[in-house]
Length: 409
Image (tube, rainbow, N blue to C red; front, side, top):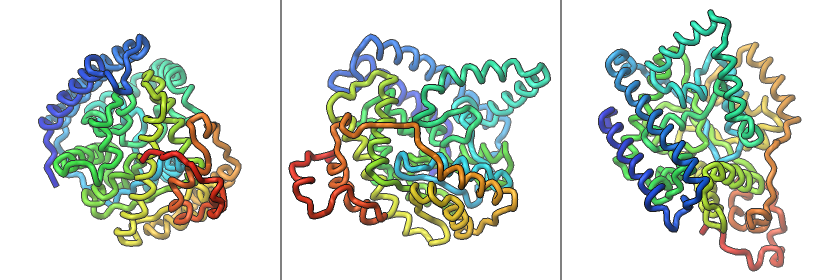
């Protein structure tokens, strides 16, 4: 495995950043980064914030090397990765397992976007203690700002700075986070991340995995090396082989969901994200790109995970998490050799009842994306059969599936 080089990552970060900014403002013709007054204004603010945050973070990474070099000796023991098809219940499963704090430690959103380094966390923990002694005025202000920033996204993905979150955001400084495709909609530059194991050059795989490993080491350095690192990244599905090589004793849980619901939900959430930056998502190009992402995830996970020992991997359906959470989690714990404490078992029983009554607040209309159930079935028929999902039409109903347009091919 390639050794972590801070200098190499900093140079790559700024080189990539300025390349993407140049395309955004000077070479956006015939791309989804269309020129519009709104997009120009949003990207101007976003770019300034990005450069400031990126610079502060890299300075903090340098400080880590100077003041906390001991993080490099941290041993990451049997980390547990939750990944899956987009919109397939990874967030719920992650946040539920994160409640088992006697066993796991995981990243929170504030750690990922504000303080990914040891230095930043030490500073913020100190300021937090001073704020607590003063009665918590800064905490109250941050809670108000959090509601203003994230409240409108609750129906898509409930967000709080203190909630467990996917540590894929930790890769944003080196532009290896696929969500960067929203402000920078250039598939030729960032699209490979959605097909990582097959599309990423070996040099990039090694560099990105080496950087990610240090992110986990820093986290354990702060939170304790006696805990198991719990990671949830829906976007890690394409990286399963690279992760398994980097962390040879890891455990991996993959989640899937009926394509009739997962596909439009993913398209909807990504389109709403693209709308923030006023990207050009008219027509079917962006939709088909997201279908390709979904298609790869549905295929790659069940092909690669069985190559690991049975005691180190498991694929679960979101529908089973909803109907029998206790059984799914009990099976997972038994397979990975975890014991369920009485307190966590009580919590498991309580959440299992809640999950059965859960109804998503994220709604979408297939026809608004130029899709139908028959089109989705045709594109993902193997998924229906592999995971036991009921097709929307009888396989022999030719009238229902004829003249179906190509989707994302």
